[in-house]
Image 1 (spheres, rainbow, N blue to C red):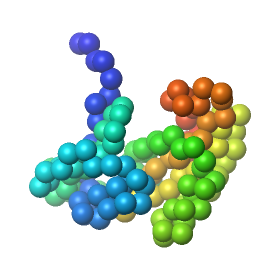
Image 2 (image 1 turned 60 degrees about the vertical axis):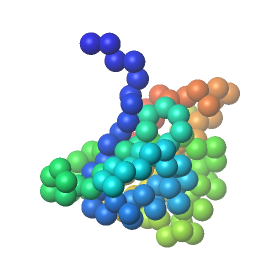
Image 3 (image 1 turned 90 degrees about the vertical axis):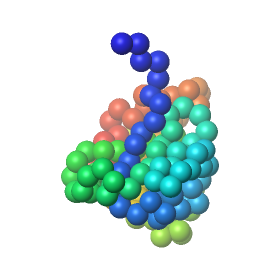
Image 4 (image 1 turned 135 degrees about the vertical axis):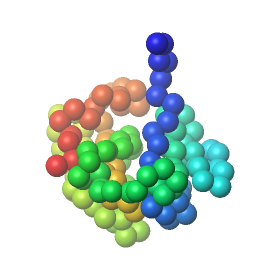
Length: 137
């Protein structure tokens, strides 16, 4: 097996239209490909792919219960949280500062945990491992 990179993260969602609106219009991920029951969002790296849970299995529990967290690197976590709060997004955990950077956790429409991370290192655009120590609990 020769895995080269993560291609996409797939989320089964209760309401595809509502989730597409959240990730595209509120979070700002561009729609890369859209079919009737599948939507890919993002521009580079792994894509976030959404499809209706009812097509695969019953949607049971939230990511708070099942441990799923999606992480996004952001340029300014404070302004991101303020903007999302104004848009009515649930803030699961407000900003926490650690040696590696700042982190907050929000919830999407299906209560999936979304980690927003602002690294503090000079090479912050390259940081992907900065989530250590930033568990959602």
